[in-house]
Image (cartoon, rainbow, N blue to C red; front, side, top):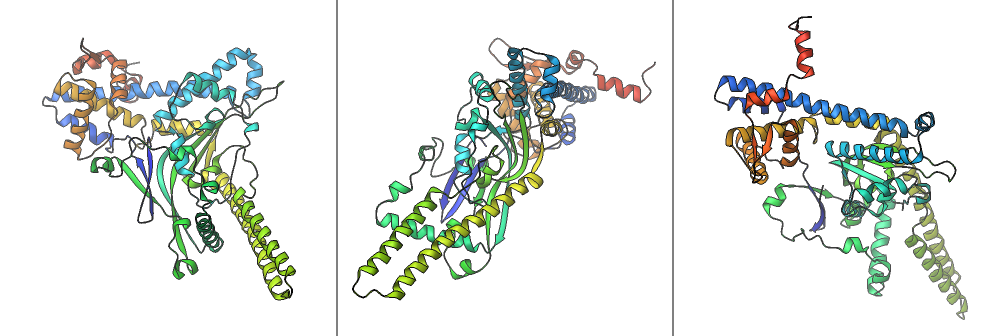
Length: 500
């Protein structure tokens, strides 16, 4: 989701998300289809052998990377890491270097698992609405370390990082939809009061003082157009956000059940470190994994949350109502004939509004506690070492997301194009690969040619000429360069073909 946009058409709020880069074709089908396009049977056999060896090699690279990642994390595990660091007796400078190495490995694995860091714009869009969580949630930043991530991002610059990126990082992957049906009586009352309050502010021209937008939301996206081309729509996933705030006022909607809808982040991973003391710094690195988090309720995954309280606007409404009510009572008492029933009515209205504010807050607090409990038991998949094992499984085993299988497919397609169509620049190779997928499989995707050619060069079976065009070696030579893999030897031994 490299870009996110909101648009309103006929009171509809739509969030447009860029589709993820995946090849929606099963690997066996892809390999056999490409093999059948090769004319000679001997070349087909060599191609099938090459596909297996490419997969084995890429898998071996990632297994080694995961072993390094897990070994490093054992030193920074919040539970047992401190004990292991004491046993190692490492100087602080070397520990600093090791923890930066761990973050480097972790961020690389995140990228291969198709996780991306939530940007400032994405956070603004996600939190611009309300869903089930109606309380202002803030982070107690005094409890979070700033040195670990601050140092990493100072050495690895990334654009559009959120303001909190030196304290914690939110990774997100995948998009879903969450729907909830209920009467939402208190929320409907709040919505009516908010609309009346907004109209009052507009009438008195005080809206600009109470309803200021943050500068981040006022920025215009240079890529955003009022008219979206069909090509752009094909590359985007549109999800409608249905909120109570945008509900049409009618007797049916106010008295009956309604359904609200919110796009969700399919997976969320939060990385942070708690602050230590001057004498005993905390070296533990927390890695927490959540699923199906509504965008508007993203606050429930934040670390070290403060206990929520009344919002500043609630206090403004509360105090303004109290002042107006007391002013009306005093004015009634100054009249020659003070009407007792008028005074009682004014006081009853004032007390009722204060009671409504209090009970609404209590209801929101109960909902908040329920959401936190749910996030801990239902939505939190794992933490620490378990999260890293999930990532390992995502990259190596699953057919979803931009994992090992997707990367193997990209490498195979790129080599096939160079083998069949000859030399190509990076842009031409990218275009030819996408055209092949569209012609042979009737599928469209955003092909990542950079990662594919990087791996082909690392394998030594693709090089560049003097003007930068890529070209590959022959099939037989490619298999000779890679050589017999350990997996092939194990399979031969299992089949009894290897003589002891």
